[in-house]
Image 1 (tube, rainbow over the protein chains, first blue to last red):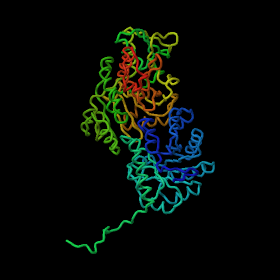
Image 2: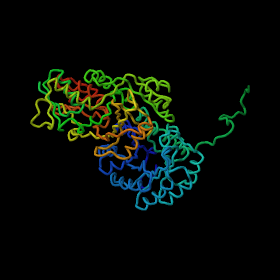
Image 3: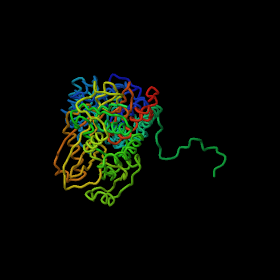
Image 4: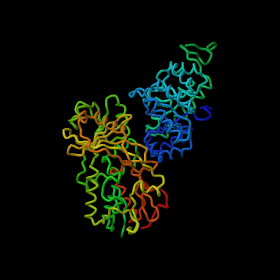
Length: 257
Length: 334
Protein backbone atom coordinates (compact mmCIF):
# COMPACT_ATOMS: atom_id res chain seq x y z
CA UNK A 1 0.00 0.00 0.00
CA UNK A 2 1.18 3.48 -0.83
CA UNK A 3 0.78 6.17 1.81
CA UNK A 4 0.65 9.75 0.47
CA UNK A 5 -0.14 12.19 3.24
CA UNK A 6 -3.43 10.93 4.74
CA UNK A 7 -4.35 8.76 1.75
CA UNK A 8 -3.67 5.07 1.35
CA UNK A 9 -3.56 3.89 -2.23
CA UNK A 10 -3.32 0.50 -3.88
CA UNK A 11 -2.04 1.66 -7.24
CA UNK A 12 1.56 2.83 -7.54
CA UNK A 13 1.00 4.37 -10.95
CA UNK A 14 -0.06 8.00 -11.21
CA UNK A 15 -1.15 9.36 -14.59
CA UNK A 16 -0.95 12.85 -16.04
CA UNK A 17 -3.99 13.98 -18.05
CA UNK A 18 -2.46 16.11 -20.81
CA UNK A 19 -2.05 15.42 -24.53
CA UNK A 20 -4.31 12.40 -24.94
CA UNK A 21 -6.10 12.04 -28.28
CA UNK A 22 -9.35 12.73 -26.42
CA UNK A 23 -10.84 12.77 -22.92
CA UNK A 24 -12.55 9.48 -23.75
CA UNK A 25 -9.16 7.85 -24.39
CA UNK A 26 -7.81 9.35 -21.17
CA UNK A 27 -10.73 7.93 -19.25
CA UNK A 28 -10.26 4.47 -20.78
CA UNK A 29 -6.52 4.61 -19.97
CA UNK A 30 -7.21 5.49 -16.32
CA UNK A 31 -9.65 2.60 -16.05
CA UNK A 32 -7.45 0.07 -17.83
CA UNK A 33 -4.53 0.86 -15.52
CA UNK A 34 -6.59 0.96 -12.31
CA UNK A 35 -5.09 4.35 -11.56
CA UNK A 36 -6.22 6.11 -8.36
CA UNK A 37 -4.49 9.49 -8.74
CA UNK A 38 -4.32 11.75 -11.80
CA UNK A 39 -2.50 15.06 -12.13
CA UNK A 40 -4.24 17.99 -13.82
CA UNK A 41 -2.45 21.08 -15.04
CA UNK A 42 -4.29 24.29 -14.43
CA UNK A 43 -4.01 27.14 -16.91
CA UNK A 44 -4.58 30.37 -15.10
CA UNK A 45 -7.01 31.81 -17.60
CA UNK A 46 -9.17 28.68 -17.49
CA UNK A 47 -9.34 28.91 -13.70
CA UNK A 48 -10.05 32.62 -13.66
CA UNK A 49 -13.09 32.39 -15.87
CA UNK A 50 -14.01 28.89 -14.80
CA UNK A 51 -13.77 28.19 -18.47
CA UNK A 52 -12.33 24.71 -18.19
CA UNK A 53 -15.54 23.25 -16.70
CA UNK A 54 -16.18 20.99 -19.66
CA UNK A 55 -12.85 19.23 -19.23
CA UNK A 56 -12.89 19.30 -15.43
CA UNK A 57 -16.26 17.65 -15.24
CA UNK A 58 -14.84 14.83 -17.36
CA UNK A 59 -11.90 14.60 -14.94
CA UNK A 60 -14.25 14.47 -11.93
CA UNK A 61 -16.23 11.74 -13.64
CA UNK A 62 -13.10 9.55 -13.55
CA UNK A 63 -13.76 9.19 -9.81
CA UNK A 64 -10.10 9.26 -8.84
CA UNK A 65 -8.08 11.61 -6.67
CA UNK A 66 -7.00 14.75 -8.46
CA UNK A 67 -3.50 16.06 -7.87
CA UNK A 68 -3.52 19.54 -9.41
CA UNK A 69 -0.16 20.69 -10.66
CA UNK A 70 1.40 24.07 -11.26
CA UNK A 71 2.85 23.05 -14.63
CA UNK A 72 4.46 25.81 -16.61
CA UNK A 73 5.01 28.15 -13.65
CA UNK A 74 8.37 29.91 -13.68
CA UNK A 75 8.27 31.88 -10.46
CA UNK A 76 7.38 31.37 -6.81
CA UNK A 77 4.54 33.86 -7.03
CA UNK A 78 3.05 32.28 -10.12
CA UNK A 79 3.22 28.80 -8.59
CA UNK A 80 1.64 29.91 -5.31
CA UNK A 81 -1.18 31.73 -7.12
CA UNK A 82 -1.84 28.70 -9.30
CA UNK A 83 -1.90 26.45 -6.22
CA UNK A 84 -4.53 28.71 -4.65
CA UNK A 85 -6.68 28.52 -7.77
CA UNK A 86 -6.28 24.76 -7.93
CA UNK A 87 -7.41 24.38 -4.32
CA UNK A 88 -10.53 26.34 -5.15
CA UNK A 89 -11.31 24.60 -8.43
CA UNK A 90 -10.66 21.01 -7.30
CA UNK A 91 -11.41 21.31 -3.58
CA UNK A 92 -8.17 19.62 -2.50
CA UNK A 93 -5.15 20.67 -0.47
CA UNK A 94 -2.93 18.41 -2.58
CA UNK A 95 -0.72 20.20 -5.04
CA UNK A 96 2.06 19.00 -7.28
CA UNK A 97 4.45 21.88 -7.17
CA UNK A 98 6.41 22.69 -10.30
CA UNK A 99 8.63 25.73 -10.58
CA UNK A 100 10.46 25.52 -13.88
CA UNK A 101 13.96 26.95 -13.99
CA UNK A 102 15.09 26.16 -17.50
CA UNK A 103 12.85 25.95 -20.52
CA UNK A 104 14.90 23.61 -22.63
CA UNK A 105 15.01 20.73 -20.17
CA UNK A 106 12.08 21.88 -17.99
CA UNK A 107 14.48 21.38 -15.10
CA UNK A 108 13.02 22.48 -11.76
CA UNK A 109 14.26 25.74 -10.25
CA UNK A 110 15.10 24.13 -6.92
CA UNK A 111 15.57 27.46 -5.14
CA UNK A 112 12.15 28.76 -6.16
CA UNK A 113 10.73 25.32 -5.48
CA UNK A 114 11.84 25.20 -1.84
CA UNK A 115 10.61 28.72 -1.25
CA UNK A 116 7.20 28.02 -2.80
CA UNK A 117 7.02 24.74 -0.87
CA UNK A 118 7.67 26.57 2.41
CA UNK A 119 4.87 29.06 1.69
CA UNK A 120 2.34 26.44 0.63
CA UNK A 121 3.11 23.98 3.43
CA UNK A 122 2.66 26.80 5.94
CA UNK A 123 -0.74 27.52 4.39
CA UNK A 124 -1.80 23.91 4.94
CA UNK A 125 -1.20 22.52 1.46
CA UNK A 126 0.05 18.96 1.09
CA UNK A 127 2.84 19.56 -1.34
CA UNK A 128 4.27 17.09 -3.87
CA UNK A 129 7.37 18.89 -5.15
CA UNK A 130 8.72 18.07 -8.61
CA UNK A 131 12.46 18.14 -7.94
CA UNK A 132 15.79 16.85 -9.17
CA UNK A 133 17.62 13.88 -7.63
CA UNK A 134 19.73 16.25 -5.48
CA UNK A 135 20.03 15.09 -1.85
CA UNK A 136 20.52 18.51 -0.32
CA UNK A 137 17.53 19.97 -2.14
CA UNK A 138 15.52 17.02 -0.86
CA UNK A 139 16.59 17.88 2.71
CA UNK A 140 15.45 21.45 2.24
CA UNK A 141 12.08 20.37 0.81
CA UNK A 142 11.49 18.09 3.79
CA UNK A 143 12.47 20.89 6.14
CA UNK A 144 9.97 23.12 4.32
CA UNK A 145 7.24 20.66 5.28
CA UNK A 146 6.94 18.34 2.27
CA UNK A 147 6.23 14.71 3.21
CA UNK A 148 6.45 13.31 -0.34
CA UNK A 149 9.14 13.98 -2.96
CA UNK A 150 8.90 13.64 -6.71
CA UNK A 151 12.39 13.44 -8.21
CA UNK A 152 12.70 13.37 -11.99
CA UNK A 153 13.98 10.36 -13.85
CA UNK A 154 14.90 12.43 -16.89
CA UNK A 155 13.59 15.66 -18.48
CA UNK A 156 9.79 15.79 -18.91
CA UNK A 157 8.61 13.96 -22.00
CA UNK A 158 12.09 12.77 -22.97
CA UNK A 159 11.39 9.07 -22.48
CA UNK A 160 14.98 8.44 -21.36
CA UNK A 161 14.19 6.54 -18.17
CA UNK A 162 16.27 6.80 -15.00
CA UNK A 163 19.13 9.04 -16.09
CA UNK A 164 21.19 9.27 -12.93
CA UNK A 165 20.97 5.88 -11.25
CA UNK A 166 23.72 6.59 -8.76
CA UNK A 167 22.03 9.69 -7.35
CA UNK A 168 18.57 8.16 -7.41
CA UNK A 169 19.80 5.15 -5.42
CA UNK A 170 21.51 7.49 -2.96
CA UNK A 171 18.28 9.45 -2.57
CA UNK A 172 16.35 6.27 -1.84
CA UNK A 173 18.95 5.10 0.65
CA UNK A 174 19.13 8.47 2.35
CA UNK A 175 15.37 8.87 2.89
CA UNK A 176 14.11 5.33 3.53
CA UNK A 177 10.83 6.51 5.05
CA UNK A 178 9.82 9.31 2.69
CA UNK A 179 7.48 8.33 -0.16
CA UNK A 180 9.47 8.95 -3.34
CA UNK A 181 7.65 9.11 -6.68
CA UNK A 182 9.61 9.14 -9.92
CA UNK A 183 8.10 11.99 -11.88
CA UNK A 184 8.97 12.66 -15.50
CA UNK A 185 11.20 11.13 -18.10
CA UNK A 186 9.91 7.55 -18.31
CA UNK A 187 9.34 6.23 -21.82
CA UNK A 188 8.57 2.52 -21.53
CA UNK A 189 7.20 0.23 -18.80
CA UNK A 190 10.54 -1.51 -18.14
CA UNK A 191 11.86 1.82 -16.81
CA UNK A 192 8.90 2.04 -14.43
CA UNK A 193 9.59 -1.50 -13.26
CA UNK A 194 13.21 -0.54 -12.69
CA UNK A 195 12.17 2.43 -10.53
CA UNK A 196 10.04 0.21 -8.33
CA UNK A 197 12.78 -2.46 -8.15
CA UNK A 198 15.13 0.24 -6.84
CA UNK A 199 12.65 0.89 -4.07
CA UNK A 200 10.84 3.96 -5.31
CA UNK A 201 7.27 4.02 -4.09
CA UNK A 202 5.48 4.98 -7.27
CA UNK A 203 5.87 6.58 -10.70
CA UNK A 204 4.01 9.35 -12.48
CA UNK A 205 3.70 9.01 -16.25
CA UNK A 206 2.05 11.25 -18.82
CA UNK A 207 3.65 11.62 -22.25
CA UNK A 208 4.72 7.96 -22.49
CA UNK A 209 1.08 6.92 -22.20
CA UNK A 210 -0.74 9.88 -23.77
CA UNK A 211 1.40 9.96 -26.89
CA UNK A 212 1.64 6.21 -27.38
CA UNK A 213 -0.11 4.94 -30.48
CA UNK A 214 -2.54 3.13 -28.16
CA UNK A 215 -2.63 4.96 -24.82
CA UNK A 216 -5.09 2.53 -23.25
CA UNK A 217 -2.88 -0.48 -23.86
CA UNK A 218 0.24 1.44 -22.82
CA UNK A 219 -1.40 2.50 -19.54
CA UNK A 220 -2.22 -1.12 -18.78
CA UNK A 221 1.36 -2.10 -19.62
CA UNK A 222 2.73 0.49 -17.19
CA UNK A 223 0.36 -0.70 -14.49
CA UNK A 224 1.65 -4.26 -14.83
CA UNK A 225 5.28 -3.11 -14.90
CA UNK A 226 4.79 -1.12 -11.71
CA UNK A 227 3.17 -4.09 -10.04
CA UNK A 228 6.01 -6.36 -11.19
CA UNK A 229 8.64 -3.90 -9.95
CA UNK A 230 7.02 -3.57 -6.54
CA UNK A 231 6.64 -7.34 -6.20
CA UNK A 232 10.29 -7.82 -7.20
CA UNK A 233 11.41 -5.29 -4.61
CA UNK A 234 9.39 -7.04 -1.93
CA UNK A 235 10.71 -10.42 -3.03
CA UNK A 236 14.35 -9.37 -2.47
CA UNK A 237 16.40 -9.47 -5.69
CA UNK A 238 19.76 -11.25 -5.76
CA UNK A 239 22.98 -9.29 -5.87
CA UNK A 240 24.63 -9.14 -9.29
CA UNK A 241 28.01 -10.93 -9.56
CA UNK A 242 30.95 -10.77 -11.89
CA UNK A 243 31.06 -14.52 -12.62
CA UNK A 244 28.66 -17.35 -13.28
CA UNK A 245 26.93 -18.91 -10.29
CA UNK A 246 25.60 -22.26 -11.46
CA UNK A 247 22.11 -23.00 -10.28
CA UNK A 248 22.79 -26.76 -10.22
CA UNK A 249 25.75 -28.22 -8.36
CA UNK A 250 28.64 -29.27 -10.63
CA UNK A 251 30.29 -31.62 -8.21
CA UNK A 252 29.36 -35.16 -8.92
CA UNK A 253 28.28 -34.72 -12.53
CA UNK A 254 29.06 -37.91 -14.39
CA UNK A 255 30.70 -36.52 -17.50
CA UNK A 256 32.63 -33.29 -18.13
CA UNK A 257 33.47 -32.44 -21.69
CA UNK B 1 -40.02 18.42 -48.53
CA UNK B 2 -39.38 21.43 -46.31
CA UNK B 3 -36.30 21.26 -44.11
CA UNK B 4 -34.70 23.81 -41.79
CA UNK B 5 -31.00 23.95 -41.12
CA UNK B 6 -29.91 25.96 -38.10
CA UNK B 7 -26.42 27.40 -37.93
CA UNK B 8 -24.52 28.85 -40.91
CA UNK B 9 -21.03 27.65 -40.05
CA UNK B 10 -19.33 25.16 -42.30
CA UNK B 11 -21.49 22.29 -41.05
CA UNK B 12 -24.79 24.09 -41.60
CA UNK B 13 -23.82 25.42 -45.03
CA UNK B 14 -22.70 22.04 -46.32
CA UNK B 15 -25.84 20.40 -44.93
CA UNK B 16 -28.02 23.02 -46.67
CA UNK B 17 -26.22 22.37 -49.96
CA UNK B 18 -26.49 18.58 -49.69
CA UNK B 19 -30.20 18.80 -48.85
CA UNK B 20 -30.86 21.21 -51.73
CA UNK B 21 -28.92 18.94 -54.10
CA UNK B 22 -31.39 16.18 -53.19
CA UNK B 23 -34.39 18.34 -54.03
CA UNK B 24 -35.37 19.49 -50.52
CA UNK B 25 -36.90 22.92 -49.94
CA UNK B 26 -34.28 24.27 -47.51
CA UNK B 27 -34.20 27.27 -45.27
CA UNK B 28 -30.97 28.10 -43.44
CA UNK B 29 -31.32 30.02 -40.17
CA UNK B 30 -28.42 31.73 -38.43
CA UNK B 31 -28.56 33.41 -35.02
CA UNK B 32 -25.89 35.97 -35.92
CA UNK B 33 -26.78 39.02 -38.01
CA UNK B 34 -24.27 38.21 -40.73
CA UNK B 35 -21.61 35.65 -41.60
CA UNK B 36 -18.68 36.17 -39.26
CA UNK B 37 -16.96 35.50 -35.97
CA UNK B 38 -20.05 34.10 -34.22
CA UNK B 39 -19.21 30.75 -35.82
CA UNK B 40 -15.99 29.01 -34.85
CA UNK B 41 -15.60 28.19 -38.57
CA UNK B 42 -14.52 31.81 -38.92
CA UNK B 43 -11.29 31.09 -37.06
CA UNK B 44 -10.48 27.76 -38.69
CA UNK B 45 -7.09 26.97 -40.17
CA UNK B 46 -8.64 25.56 -43.33
CA UNK B 47 -6.29 22.61 -43.70
CA UNK B 48 -7.76 19.64 -45.53
CA UNK B 49 -5.32 17.13 -44.11
CA UNK B 50 -6.96 13.75 -43.50
CA UNK B 51 -3.71 11.79 -43.34
CA UNK B 52 -1.83 14.18 -41.07
CA UNK B 53 -4.76 13.94 -38.67
CA UNK B 54 -4.20 10.18 -38.42
CA UNK B 55 -1.39 11.03 -36.04
CA UNK B 56 -3.79 11.54 -33.17
CA UNK B 57 -7.36 11.16 -34.38
CA UNK B 58 -8.11 7.62 -35.52
CA UNK B 59 -9.30 6.32 -38.87
CA UNK B 60 -12.80 7.84 -38.94
CA UNK B 61 -11.57 11.42 -39.30
CA UNK B 62 -9.19 10.37 -42.07
CA UNK B 63 -11.95 8.51 -43.87
CA UNK B 64 -14.45 11.39 -43.66
CA UNK B 65 -11.71 13.86 -44.59
CA UNK B 66 -10.57 11.93 -47.65
CA UNK B 67 -14.20 11.62 -48.73
CA UNK B 68 -14.68 15.40 -48.37
CA UNK B 69 -11.70 16.47 -50.49
CA UNK B 70 -13.40 16.05 -53.91
CA UNK B 71 -16.49 17.85 -52.55
CA UNK B 72 -14.40 20.89 -51.73
CA UNK B 73 -12.79 20.89 -55.15
CA UNK B 74 -16.24 20.79 -56.72
CA UNK B 75 -17.97 23.34 -54.46
CA UNK B 76 -15.20 25.83 -53.82
CA UNK B 77 -12.81 26.70 -56.66
CA UNK B 78 -10.40 28.30 -54.18
CA UNK B 79 -9.49 24.88 -52.81
CA UNK B 80 -5.75 24.32 -53.28
CA UNK B 81 -4.41 20.79 -53.56
CA UNK B 82 -0.68 21.22 -53.07
CA UNK B 83 -0.35 18.80 -50.20
CA UNK B 84 1.06 19.45 -46.74
CA UNK B 85 4.69 19.84 -45.71
CA UNK B 86 5.63 18.58 -42.25
CA UNK B 87 8.99 19.58 -40.83
CA UNK B 88 10.76 19.68 -37.52
CA UNK B 89 13.83 21.35 -36.14
CA UNK B 90 16.93 19.15 -36.03
CA UNK B 91 16.85 18.04 -32.45
CA UNK B 92 13.15 17.14 -32.58
CA UNK B 93 13.73 14.52 -35.27
CA UNK B 94 12.06 11.78 -33.16
CA UNK B 95 8.81 13.75 -33.52
CA UNK B 96 9.03 13.44 -37.31
CA UNK B 97 9.84 9.74 -37.16
CA UNK B 98 6.86 9.12 -34.90
CA UNK B 99 4.58 11.28 -37.06
CA UNK B 100 5.54 9.34 -40.21
CA UNK B 101 5.01 6.00 -38.50
CA UNK B 102 1.53 6.90 -37.30
CA UNK B 103 0.20 8.57 -40.43
CA UNK B 104 1.51 7.01 -43.63
CA UNK B 105 0.44 8.22 -47.07
CA UNK B 106 3.47 10.52 -47.17
CA UNK B 107 7.00 10.48 -48.55
CA UNK B 108 10.12 11.41 -46.59
CA UNK B 109 12.08 14.44 -47.77
CA UNK B 110 15.73 15.35 -47.38
CA UNK B 111 17.00 18.93 -47.30
CA UNK B 112 17.08 19.18 -51.11
CA UNK B 113 13.54 17.87 -51.45
CA UNK B 114 12.24 20.30 -48.82
CA UNK B 115 13.92 23.13 -50.74
CA UNK B 116 12.47 21.89 -54.02
CA UNK B 117 8.95 21.98 -52.60
CA UNK B 118 9.26 25.26 -50.70
CA UNK B 119 12.27 27.26 -51.96
CA UNK B 120 11.85 29.81 -49.17
CA UNK B 121 12.63 27.09 -46.63
CA UNK B 122 15.88 26.03 -48.36
CA UNK B 123 18.63 25.28 -45.90
CA UNK B 124 16.33 25.49 -42.91
CA UNK B 125 15.20 21.88 -42.52
CA UNK B 126 17.21 18.71 -43.06
CA UNK B 127 14.18 16.42 -42.98
CA UNK B 128 10.51 16.63 -43.80
CA UNK B 129 7.42 14.74 -44.90
CA UNK B 130 5.20 15.51 -47.88
CA UNK B 131 1.55 14.53 -47.79
CA UNK B 132 0.96 15.12 -51.49
CA UNK B 133 -2.80 14.53 -51.66
CA UNK B 134 -3.86 16.99 -48.99
CA UNK B 135 -5.18 20.49 -49.54
CA UNK B 136 -6.09 23.79 -47.93
CA UNK B 137 -8.49 26.66 -48.33
CA UNK B 138 -9.33 30.06 -46.91
CA UNK B 139 -12.25 29.35 -44.55
CA UNK B 140 -13.81 32.81 -44.77
CA UNK B 141 -13.73 32.83 -48.57
CA UNK B 142 -15.07 29.29 -48.54
CA UNK B 143 -17.95 30.21 -46.19
CA UNK B 144 -19.08 33.09 -48.40
CA UNK B 145 -18.73 30.98 -51.55
CA UNK B 146 -20.90 28.27 -49.98
CA UNK B 147 -23.43 30.88 -48.91
CA UNK B 148 -23.63 32.25 -52.47
CA UNK B 149 -23.96 28.78 -53.83
CA UNK B 150 -26.70 27.90 -51.34
CA UNK B 151 -28.69 30.96 -52.39
CA UNK B 152 -28.15 30.07 -56.04
CA UNK B 153 -29.52 26.59 -55.34
CA UNK B 154 -32.71 28.07 -53.93
CA UNK B 155 -31.89 27.86 -50.23
CA UNK B 156 -33.67 30.59 -48.23
CA UNK B 157 -31.09 32.14 -45.92
CA UNK B 158 -32.22 34.11 -42.84
CA UNK B 159 -29.76 35.81 -40.56
CA UNK B 160 -30.63 37.04 -37.08
CA UNK B 161 -32.89 34.13 -36.16
CA UNK B 162 -32.23 30.72 -34.71
CA UNK B 163 -35.63 29.15 -35.23
CA UNK B 164 -38.76 29.27 -33.13
CA UNK B 165 -41.69 30.23 -35.31
CA UNK B 166 -39.52 30.29 -38.40
CA UNK B 167 -38.92 26.55 -38.39
CA UNK B 168 -40.51 24.53 -41.17
CA UNK B 169 -40.29 20.76 -41.33
CA UNK B 170 -37.65 18.60 -39.73
CA UNK B 171 -34.48 20.29 -38.52
CA UNK B 172 -30.79 19.73 -38.96
CA UNK B 173 -29.15 21.44 -36.00
CA UNK B 174 -25.59 22.65 -36.64
CA UNK B 175 -25.39 25.14 -33.80
CA UNK B 176 -22.18 23.84 -32.24
CA UNK B 177 -21.73 24.69 -28.56
CA UNK B 178 -25.12 26.43 -28.50
CA UNK B 179 -26.67 22.93 -28.54
CA UNK B 180 -25.06 22.15 -25.21
CA UNK B 181 -28.30 22.29 -23.26
CA UNK B 182 -29.44 19.27 -25.28
CA UNK B 183 -26.15 17.52 -26.04
CA UNK B 184 -24.79 17.67 -22.52
CA UNK B 185 -21.48 15.95 -23.13
CA UNK B 186 -20.37 18.69 -25.52
CA UNK B 187 -17.44 20.76 -24.30
CA UNK B 188 -15.47 23.67 -25.72
CA UNK B 189 -11.87 23.42 -26.87
CA UNK B 190 -10.44 26.82 -27.47
CA UNK B 191 -8.14 27.61 -30.36
CA UNK B 192 -6.19 30.78 -30.94
CA UNK B 193 -4.90 32.02 -34.29
CA UNK B 194 -2.99 34.87 -35.84
CA UNK B 195 -3.33 36.42 -39.24
CA UNK B 196 -0.06 37.86 -40.52
CA UNK B 197 0.85 39.78 -43.65
CA UNK B 198 4.28 39.13 -45.10
CA UNK B 199 4.28 39.79 -48.87
CA UNK B 200 7.94 38.89 -49.36
CA UNK B 201 7.48 35.28 -48.24
CA UNK B 202 5.88 32.68 -50.47
CA UNK B 203 4.66 29.27 -49.38
CA UNK B 204 2.68 26.99 -51.68
CA UNK B 205 1.16 24.77 -49.02
CA UNK B 206 0.50 24.53 -45.29
CA UNK B 207 3.60 23.82 -43.24
CA UNK B 208 3.33 21.99 -39.95
CA UNK B 209 6.22 22.33 -37.57
CA UNK B 210 6.30 19.46 -35.11
CA UNK B 211 7.50 20.21 -31.62
CA UNK B 212 7.06 18.28 -28.39
CA UNK B 213 5.37 21.20 -26.66
CA UNK B 214 4.44 23.82 -29.23
CA UNK B 215 3.33 22.27 -32.49
CA UNK B 216 2.25 24.96 -34.92
CA UNK B 217 1.05 25.30 -38.49
CA UNK B 218 1.31 28.09 -41.01
CA UNK B 219 -1.25 28.17 -43.80
CA UNK B 220 -0.71 30.47 -46.80
CA UNK B 221 -3.84 32.45 -47.62
CA UNK B 222 -2.53 34.08 -50.78
CA UNK B 223 -1.73 37.77 -51.30
CA UNK B 224 1.01 37.59 -48.68
CA UNK B 225 -1.35 36.51 -45.88
CA UNK B 226 -0.57 33.68 -43.50
CA UNK B 227 -2.60 32.04 -40.81
CA UNK B 228 -0.64 30.81 -37.81
CA UNK B 229 -2.42 28.38 -35.56
CA UNK B 230 -3.51 26.96 -33.40
CA UNK B 231 -3.42 26.38 -29.73
CA UNK B 232 -5.57 23.72 -28.10
CA UNK B 233 -6.88 24.66 -24.68
CA UNK B 234 -9.51 22.88 -22.66
CA UNK B 235 -11.55 26.03 -22.22
CA UNK B 236 -15.08 27.16 -23.06
CA UNK B 237 -14.33 30.87 -23.18
CA UNK B 238 -13.22 32.45 -26.44
CA UNK B 239 -13.11 35.84 -24.86
CA UNK B 240 -9.42 36.48 -25.02
CA UNK B 241 -6.07 35.43 -26.35
CA UNK B 242 -3.39 35.08 -23.69
CA UNK B 243 0.04 36.64 -24.00
CA UNK B 244 1.57 33.21 -23.60
CA UNK B 245 -0.35 31.79 -26.55
CA UNK B 246 0.68 34.76 -28.69
CA UNK B 247 4.27 34.28 -27.67
CA UNK B 248 4.13 30.59 -28.52
CA UNK B 249 2.54 31.10 -31.91
CA UNK B 250 4.84 33.94 -32.89
CA UNK B 251 8.03 32.25 -31.76
CA UNK B 252 7.04 29.09 -33.62
CA UNK B 253 6.39 31.12 -36.80
CA UNK B 254 9.68 32.94 -36.34
CA UNK B 255 11.48 29.62 -35.94
CA UNK B 256 9.90 28.42 -39.20
CA UNK B 257 11.24 31.48 -41.00
CA UNK B 258 12.87 34.54 -39.43
CA UNK B 259 11.14 36.75 -42.00
CA UNK B 260 8.00 36.37 -39.85
CA UNK B 261 9.72 38.74 -37.43
CA UNK B 262 8.88 41.52 -39.87
CA UNK B 263 5.32 40.42 -40.55
CA UNK B 264 2.40 42.73 -39.92
CA UNK B 265 -0.09 41.35 -37.40
CA UNK B 266 -3.52 41.74 -38.97
CA UNK B 267 -5.64 39.80 -36.54
CA UNK B 268 -5.49 37.90 -33.28
CA UNK B 269 -8.49 35.68 -32.93
CA UNK B 270 -9.91 32.78 -30.99
CA UNK B 271 -12.80 30.41 -31.36
CA UNK B 272 -14.22 27.60 -29.27
CA UNK B 273 -14.64 24.31 -31.07
CA UNK B 274 -17.45 21.98 -29.98
CA UNK B 275 -16.19 18.51 -29.06
CA UNK B 276 -17.61 15.32 -27.61
CA UNK B 277 -15.52 13.37 -25.06
CA UNK B 278 -14.04 11.16 -27.81
CA UNK B 279 -13.32 14.19 -30.04
CA UNK B 280 -15.24 12.47 -32.85
CA UNK B 281 -18.14 14.06 -34.76
CA UNK B 282 -21.63 12.74 -34.27
CA UNK B 283 -25.06 12.77 -35.92
CA UNK B 284 -27.73 12.38 -33.28
CA UNK B 285 -31.52 12.39 -33.49
CA UNK B 286 -33.42 14.24 -30.78
CA UNK B 287 -37.09 14.04 -31.72
CA UNK B 288 -37.54 15.59 -35.16
CA UNK B 289 -34.16 17.25 -34.94
CA UNK B 290 -30.94 15.77 -36.28
CA UNK B 291 -27.90 17.22 -34.55
CA UNK B 292 -24.64 17.45 -36.50
CA UNK B 293 -22.06 18.36 -33.90
CA UNK B 294 -18.71 17.72 -32.24
CA UNK B 295 -16.66 18.56 -35.33
CA UNK B 296 -13.87 19.69 -32.98
CA UNK B 297 -10.89 20.94 -34.95
CA UNK B 298 -12.05 19.10 -38.07
CA UNK B 299 -14.91 21.31 -39.28
CA UNK B 300 -13.77 22.04 -42.82
CA UNK B 301 -12.08 18.66 -43.08
CA UNK B 302 -15.15 16.51 -42.42
CA UNK B 303 -18.24 18.74 -42.84
CA UNK B 304 -19.04 17.66 -46.43
CA UNK B 305 -18.93 13.94 -45.59
CA UNK B 306 -21.12 14.53 -42.53
CA UNK B 307 -23.51 16.70 -44.54
CA UNK B 308 -24.03 13.94 -47.09
CA UNK B 309 -24.85 11.49 -44.30
CA UNK B 310 -27.13 13.99 -42.54
CA UNK B 311 -29.05 14.70 -45.75
CA UNK B 312 -29.54 11.00 -46.49
CA UNK B 313 -30.46 10.25 -42.88
CA UNK B 314 -33.10 12.96 -42.92
CA UNK B 315 -34.52 12.49 -46.42
CA UNK B 316 -34.10 8.74 -46.90
CA UNK B 317 -34.08 7.43 -43.34
CA UNK B 318 -30.60 6.00 -43.70
CA UNK B 319 -28.47 5.09 -40.70
CA UNK B 320 -24.71 5.59 -40.64
CA UNK B 321 -23.31 3.61 -37.73
CA UNK B 322 -19.85 5.18 -37.98
CA UNK B 323 -21.24 8.56 -36.92
CA UNK B 324 -24.65 7.66 -35.45
CA UNK B 325 -23.65 4.70 -33.29
CA UNK B 326 -25.29 1.29 -33.18
CA UNK B 327 -28.28 2.50 -31.14
CA UNK B 328 -31.38 1.34 -33.04
CA UNK B 329 -33.29 4.22 -31.41
CA UNK B 330 -31.30 6.48 -33.70
CA UNK B 331 -32.70 4.68 -36.77
CA UNK B 332 -35.52 6.41 -38.59
CA UNK B 333 -37.90 5.76 -41.40
CA UNK B 334 -38.18 8.36 -44.10
